[in-house]
Length: 434
Image (cartoon, rainbow, N blue to C red; front, top):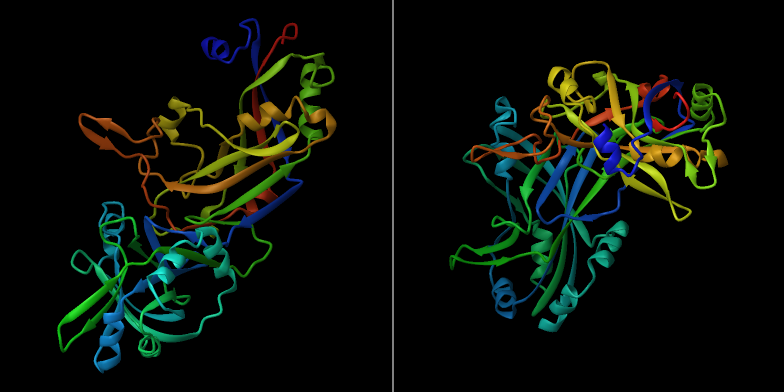
């Protein structure tokens, strides 16, 4: 500890003491779900899991006058969107083996917008549209038309390609074009029993629009400019504090300063924080919040524990910013009981480190500010008692601590936030005997 204090610029004369502040209840707690469309280029998701529906939108534009001429004069066309299932996920040792082969008839809603263009410059102009502008336009999706279709999804070691048939109405509309087109194609499967994961545009198995002419045995392939992922929250409880894995949501919890400041003042015997000018007499070495935990209201697909990621709101030049917390390892505890910051795990408590936040908070809280922290569901944990907390090389092989794919899980923190929590502080201080 002395060397660590020295690295932090804390004088070696500081004494380190610990203090428990019990019975803390949130001043407020609120879940934020970011449902704005996002670009997805590495891997893409379609379907429904953990009360979140996942849609895909493909942005395709091409100039091909020969293709449109051939399309007009033929009566037999096979058109489909080709999606390749994400093998590293489904065929990993981590994915439940008794789930394969996965088979399901899925009802898809395929909707589209189609614009005609006169030349190649039209296609170039579509590519010049900023990604942020295109994503923003998807918030007001008003398609030209849509159609429901039922497809059979099969995932196994052999079945790796999903063909989503292009509705006849869209093919008919494309026959009316002559030179260039801009197609926005949306896939929705809100009643699917699970999500399905596919390779994205940045892989060798990218999604593509295929049009085949059986009589001539010729085909055309068109690759989208980009792919958007759109989520919809299907939770029915508006007041529940539910976090979901694999999406951009967070739980923000806020505590008033008075109970924490009073506990510190009672402990030190004078007003806290104690300062003379810029001479701050204490610093937080480590801080952690412990909550009661009940996994029974949660669900996860992979059956693995999931880390809870933490951030604190700290002061920066008079403005509050969110700073992600670093995780300081307690190797002996981890080796015997596992990481304390996981849900879907043994035990009935969740302990999260909030050192950065409390270090900033206790020396500013005399103005009455609150302490705020943020939680998210992180990656599934493969080695719950590995204290490296990061993938590493072992004799030429990689030992994986985390699974590199999010679990589409859900976790309800409602009961946890209703129960009192405990803040434990380790402080370096230079006041007399303490």
